[in-house]
Image (cartoon, rainbow, N blue to C red; front, side):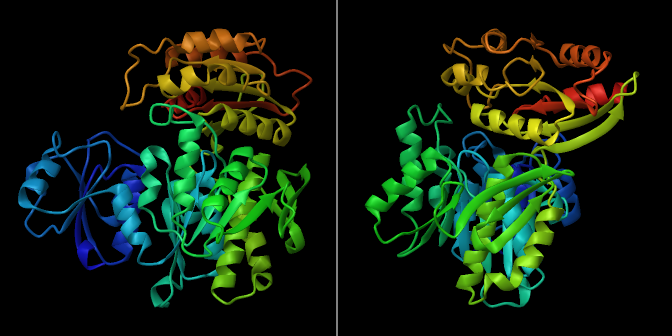
Length: 486
């Protein structure tokens, strides 16, 4: 860690950046950082660390700084901190590069996939903490069971020689190729990030390249229920016959075979091979699959550490029951009553890909059988919306009412020649769903939902309403606007 004694973070309010700052702080590094003045939920993490996010300025780069870590949203050509660091000859490292260097210091496992990375990492960290394996975990969002932060450090971490590290690793722009994993969880592979991976084969190849970074006889724990993950695992095995492949899921014939049980009493029950029965208090079969992946990783890490996983099952069962998810991952943001006395749960979810929308809403329908589901959706990026327009349109079947906002543009793209809009998405969705409304602005969306809540939920929905804001944009504000009126 000598090269990280004094580190300055440019864009420190980013989720991954704040999490990495927290991890390095735990390792004894002195951290400073800069960012925009806008408030982010990571401000609370930085406050706990005693780190002030300074305005961007060349004066932030003092002579004692040894390394500058920066978000890919900034560049030395336009950011004064980075320009000054470059001028002084201070090493500049992208977040992914710094994370990759950290992964070399410990026995590391990377969690990857188009869907489920954050939740699976959060679940794995929660389990590792419960069994007190000397470990740290870094997730891409705040995890409640981590203590409302993005990282977990087990009690035994500081006193142990062998240390384990589990991190969420991102496929965008091949960032995960800087990571050095000994084990990998692969949750899913399908077309996404069309601005960088125009074809499915492109993104699949990136995952193959990442898997092939595993050492000799390295372990790939992959989801047997996801066609893309199965295909990608097979391609990687062709390149690297030495790899040890472990499948999990309903279609796994191995020790991590998943059997879904009943959903009752606010819990989902499931069985994993010979390990027995477990339960989760969060909705959706996809969450159960993520939990199974986390169980598999923890068991394999215990084996690596010379311990018997069967001796730790009771702790893992309790830990799973305590897991309530992460920020913007089926996060309950409020509860209220309508004027007519109907109960309302407000929930926010980051789902922004058709598959994620479909599986998440199916989970809500199963978990909240007695509630009328109202969804406000804001699509993220023009390129993704255009490429997957038909799939988006068909993904809302488990919602009772759908409100669609204008597209949330990525900072890295402009609409340009891409002929797609939120209104177009709403029109296509209306071909598959009877109750679709287009409300470009949040004020209009909030008024529409308020109107829907002014009516009785009806005899088919004795438990009331579930209002879900969904997407990678900032339409979570719509839910809070409606909640404030009740």
